[in-house]
Length: 311
Image (cartoon, rainbow, N blue to C red; front, top):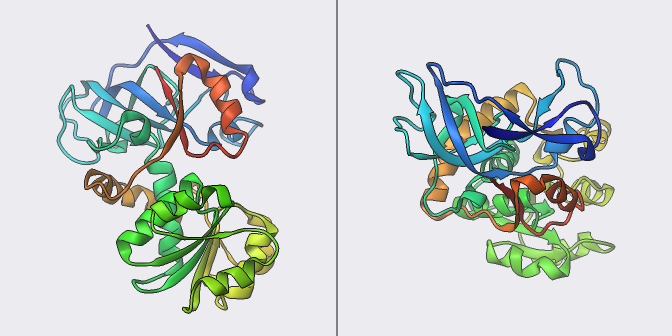
């Protein structure tokens, strides 16, 4: 029998349960996937920390997977086209990815990029689509220079790679211990902290046309406001209060326009990964049964790469 992790009620992960469950047989437009890796994101535990309108508990945990199709509904194609039982796929915005098997809408699944391990592939889409939207809403163009706060994090590393592919120069903030990671993906690293504005200006002779904030600190927003004149070209995924106060852009996957963009960009990101142009650094993997240990490590905020659960 299949097993999955659920939050039986709102609260912290120590209240989650690893239970047996019956996997539904796929209907038309659905597939069943044997999960080889489940991606992990802070949203996994944040979204079940408290009661939310429209959410009924128990809630299966996890939004991203990589695995193998083991059953298909009749006349069914996946998000990237035709597929067969035995094909490897990745999926995003699923419900209950911390599982051994899972039945999902077929349009959420795309052919797994062959250069990526299952652990990496399972973490491609959430960070990747977020990064793609951040770049898109600022309108940064080939040859221009942008500032990226949190360049060595999961979203930041994806921004660096996507910007490099588009010919956009990125100055990225990070701790000095992570400078090599920023350079590896084409960024110009600068250390955050007092004097950041001066260090950014010293790093380039070009104007900073946009700023992307993936950390949510007051420093990140203040420096962005000082360096970028057009507030429509400053975007944050982590500082809602500052966005509302200062008139900068805030995006999150639950916004309708963000959902449409992120769903629409999945195929392009999968193709970049297939071409070897988009990597997903993985810090650690854990057995699926040890999900609580993995969440505890993820919650430190400095995992140094993505984390995956392996059934």
